[in-house]
Length: 340
Image 1: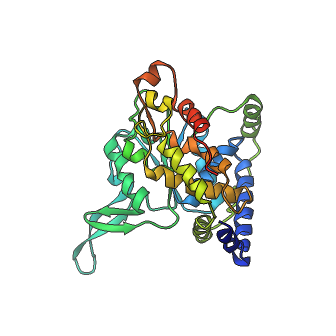
Image 2: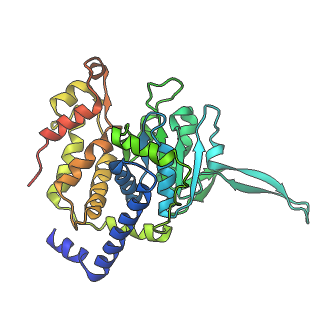
Image 3: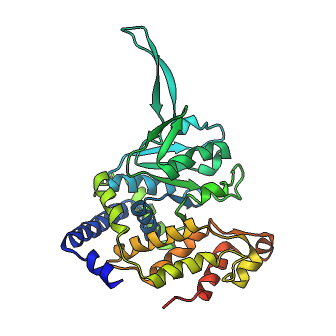
């Protein structure tokens, strides 16, 4: 890895790393001007952006999920659109559709594509589990291929493109659990929990006064973000840590020899190799955000649970014993050794 680190520390790359870290600090500052607490969630959203992935944000109503995403988009200086998912939402309401238009000068009719809200940089899919699977699936191609196909014609989305989807817990009435194939497209499933007492007091103080909140300033551009996305992929990681990430994901599969006793007892199935790739890329981004030029084991450990919690399906025994997926994954991390 020493040669990779040396190449990564060239003058040009160092300058880009400095720009990256300055942008991160400025974005955090702008977000904190509106959002109280949730620093770890904000960092996970930023990791999602610079990896080029998508994020599922799970939280009860009233935990500022929508406000957080809107504030982030403003701080990034990116195009932003919001879709409110409802039971009657149609796939074309997301992707757009072809319509017949008549040329007034010639009288000739022709098809014209009308772009849907998916044509943006940051798409807020609000309460994505409020709509049936058919409409949820309309996002699959956009999330994976960064394209939309309508009537056999492909339409390419702008870069960067990120879906930040919010959902209420599936136990709430009137929700549709996301299909496993779509869940796997999300880099993270982050939990937006309630604030502590002091933070709630700060929210009340901030949002119940007549004084207007200062506007959120854009700290970067779409072009710069694309450069940062390329930069994080160059962050060195040792062969042993690559193997460590592989071992963690393999240990989530009940049939694998690395599977822990809790996985064998409480999991129906584990994660695919997409989880491993996401874990490595996210760890590279976290290392850079922490001011380091290479990945450490702590990066992988810190991100494993939010990356895996929506990819490992607990079984009936876990529910009956009161064991949740985070408990299972936390136990897993204590049993998988770091490869030296």
